Length: 79
Image (cartoon, rainbow, N blue to C red; front, side, top):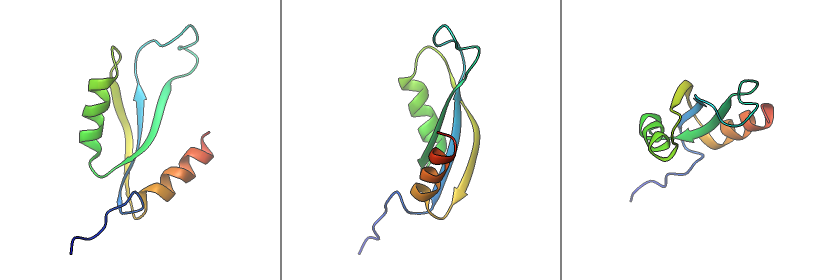
């Protein structure tokens, strides 16, 4: 049968940054997104189609054995 794919499967964990101005204190704090995806380039394109008018750039990505566990750890560390 077809193997079950879940968010705990191997894949990419990424850090993306939204460029541009968002709010009165935007110069003090950038907008970042930690996320997971099997195809990070497609996810970046999807986010840029949804997020206007400021572009989103990929800062870093890493291939990991368990996307969800790694993403959860990073969210906890950088909350």
